[in-house]
Image (tube, rainbow, N blue to C red; front, side, top):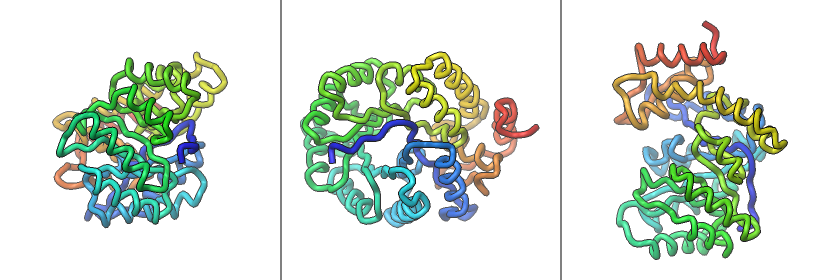
Length: 308
């Protein structure tokens, strides 16, 4: 399992809802096909952008089942098994295995917070009891635990972890992890979740990216990855700069924050582009409307993704 490697662009797939908050399977399929056609290297379902913490067990099953069906082995399918404590995470992991996932992604526990010894044991238990590669998802803003780079490197070297999705915002820690990963023979696939500074992560030694913005513009992230592989750093920076102009869909809105302003902007952009039928959000989050929708439309037009 620790031999599982993935490199390149692995978008965290945003999940479309109908107006009555059911999974919009047709829009889901359009979005997945669009990203695969653009050349992404994998897809990550039920991450933060995929509404994992808003999803019932039934909803998680539906998302993974449809995802596996639509992807149909064209790229690897990574599935988030995120939950408060180890036993629940194991349950999600076993179910994702049954439904056809290729790899699993788990955070540290985040309710009954313990020390780092408990966090390490959590990942060791997942490795022992699940039959798929496990990626650690480092997102302390949500789970209130920062995964130390030395621990991640150790678990990688021992074959406990197959990789890391880093959404920590700690560029120093990630740089150290990249260097230590190289010293250890590169046991981990290291993926950055910071879509605004992917170019810097690649220069540090990241194996790929998990950019939510690739739901909206996958081609730019694919071009950036190919340029990085070719050592064309001027093109890498140019592509990142263009994507950063598009990222202003996050900050042109008013009166919203957090999930509603982030994933809500993704869904609104995809609706305006005709990929989604609706920009509906899970309760209690409100869908963007009115002037906020028009503000996002203006960004899409200025970036050439939508006609005026």
